[in-house]
Length: 185
Picture 1 (tube, rainbow, N blue to C red):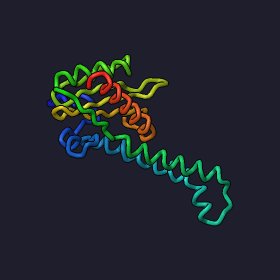
Picture 2: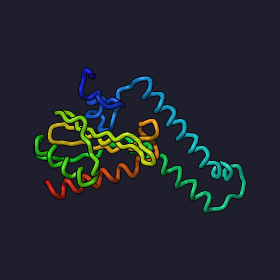
Picture 3: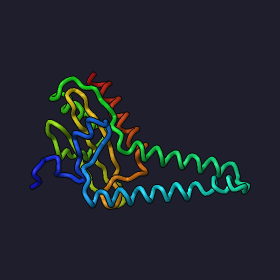
Picture 4: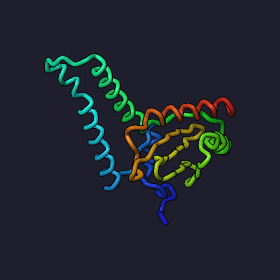
């Protein structure tokens, strides 16, 4: 049994850093660092491959316009995903007890298989490991007084955050925020 209930699910959340930076921050351990470095290197490799037409254009080679546009869009997509992957969506609530109940109701309307595994004064967290053929998912809500910080993260094959789903996860979190505000504000 872990010493701290917040350590039940890897990667471990660094609560104080989350509140201070308003971004999802994890406690560092060797496995997590290795996974993130590997994902980051894969992302850089992807950006390099996609930017080859741009490099050819700079080198004076005639490159079709559609290929240049595709390269730019894919590079911007990947950079946006890398930035938004750990972004929180801030939800203003009323009081701690009602915030939890109401947010769980909204989340249940989005996820029929939501399983809140951590639920304490600082955080609610749901973890669904990967399974074939679906991606895993981690929903993290950090509480700071009447403010809730929501992050949705897709998990890859090794159940670590992916760098390709950040944009969609962020949009879904914004939609959850909109529903929460519509029904409970």
